[in-house]
Length: 285
Image 1 (cartoon, rainbow, N blue to C red):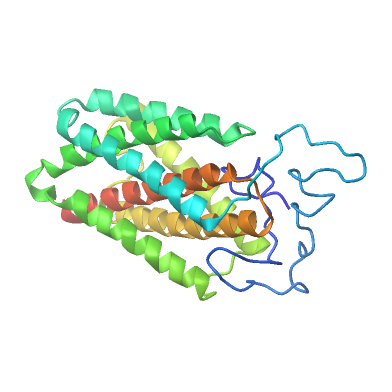
Image 2: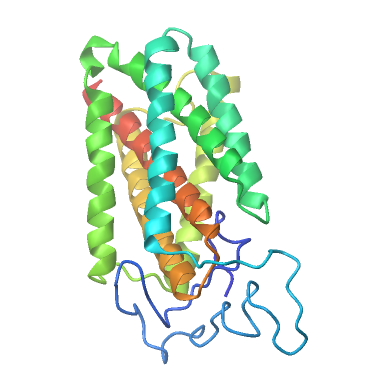
């Protein structure tokens, strides 16, 4: 089954629970309970990367691959992508803290690049790393500006630690099967994400045209509740990312797909950091 994750949905990553690798988690649902079991998209005949043995032809989407994706590949590419974000954040913190207009521009560029990569049929390392650089500039400048406010000093570091804690907690929950990624889980999460994004967009419109705090989703008690919901949704998206990585490894995705896995994890972690930074700022204000 094609993934519901917008980052992976054009790659053919399965949402099947029929075989696992990578994090060494056991199947999260039995074949009898999983309507998608047995539909490995990377198996012969259904795998978009496999050669058609009957006709001896190669699928047009990809050139023949000499290596399959491994967990080491994912870790390496994720480290490179997150390292680029951190380097960009350092530059933004030092040079753009007083120029938030440039920081907002960097954030908009990063958003456009993320959408472009999400809809490309093939991962582009240059595009992904460029996205990471601009995302880092935006996050670093915004974090530096918040840190310069006396009552918010230290909030960015708290958000970084919180993001790491969320990542570790969700990884443990996923490996121990406390969180099970099923078709129903994915469907409900996608609905919740859509509602969250739409409410955020409406709030921005009210702020832009009506002035003030819009619908109040970013301050006070309602802002705290909205921030907690954002962090929880981001954490659940990490579970989807873990599932995509394991499926890609188990089904023999080509090595280049590790860039797409790194991209998905980076986008999710950046979102969690932003929501935590916003939540901490509200709590300390």
